[in-house]
Image 1 (tube, rainbow, N blue to C red):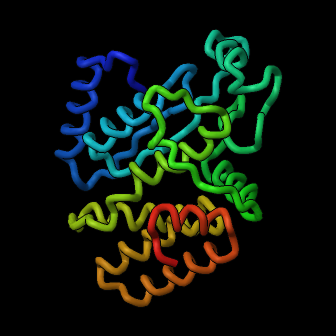
Image 2: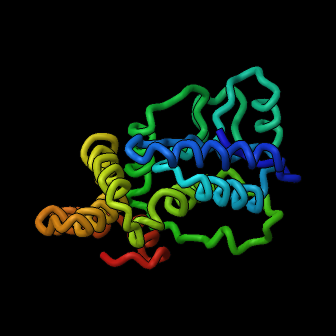
Length: 230
């Protein structure tokens, strides 16, 4: 798990860089990291720093999670005090904070279904004061944007065939098993298929992505904000 403190522990960052370098020496292994955001008092700058270190490590994929503390722990009580979770509540809003681990496929499904009929506007949270501490509501959107920034954004310019093949296999699993109606995964899977000259598969993924976006104002807002065509 990766989270940087206010002073940015230099030794810790060196450790992450060394780990990333070690894994890069084995390109055929699919490498996956786990990032947690939403710690009490965690600022936008700290989240940005976490994104930067994660991208420098160049692992193949990162699972992004909002902090889900166990009851009766110090950090749980801190999050209650800051209003990030409700005391004795299994889930505050159906999207992020749960006391127990939820399979990421189920969490993503719940997230998508809860948003499909909403027309919420997208806030450029990272344009705010870097010392801003995100609210519970903002953290839900931040989860999405951190996921995009770390996992998806650079796929369009990816040229390494070994990595392309690894990501294609992973996004096929995301699109066909782990989540339902996920336009973002299908959108970038289409790009990967095109890079491999699989025109028919690329076109099919493009059409799936368009169909999923067009039935959801929530996804249209986000595709527009990110400058993605549909």
